[in-house]
Length: 308
Ligand code: CP
Ligand code: NVA
Image 1 (cartoon, rainbow, N blue to C red):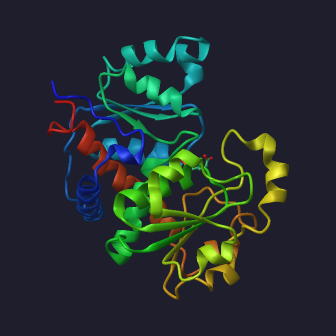
Image 2 (cartoon, rainbow, N blue to C red):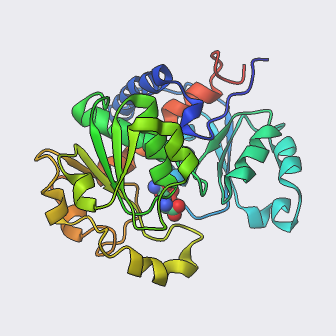
């Protein structure tokens, strides 16, 4: 049996692997759009464990595995013994004897690391408090489809230095572009993640400095899942970190706007920008499906990187 391959963070992939994933995503999107059969994972079972809510991640993985000829199994913690205190390590050992892959959305990144450590099958990070690699892979694909390679480009991140920001930072280092992040004081990305990216990631003081001349402007909610109790304090701190038409006007004329969704119109982004001509958010959401399928093929397929 080949070594089990997980995707817990973007750095688990090499640059060439990301490039291959982008190509495959492009092909799979074409097959799905034109009804070309592509059941490349017949009979494979994907467990989907969600400790937080989800629309896009759940539906893209669940629909994706079906379209590839496999089966998705939604696992809610309150319906598993995990919710009654069965250790995560034991849960991983049991589930991974029954399914071919596990997609996990949880809180602390240590939980998914522990799960992966005890899993005999690939574990895919569908969001933790630390990062959201599947979303940023999709965002890179969305860019690639519209504009080609992202290497050498400039991305402006406006707002919270959160899980999405961390994955953008990792992507910049991996793929050779620059991410300029404007975050309120006290809400910057984690220092070790920034340090690991070297010159690829740069913190700037002012959202206008981040947006100036950028190829892509992106943001996320001010309070992520699990931070709802801090909402009021966060609302106060983030008022100057809203993406509006004035900020977009500082970016390149052909700059794209992305948001992983769900979005709060009037908070981190105005409706004018989110629903405006530079926004590609609906395409970005659809692309979760195609990107996740390429990733499932890579990790659950019988090729070298799969389970074997
Ligand atoms: N962008 C994203 O991960 O959305 P969901 O929370 O709906 O899965
Ligand atoms: N940062 C957000 C992303 C949601 C897809 C959160 O963690 O809630």
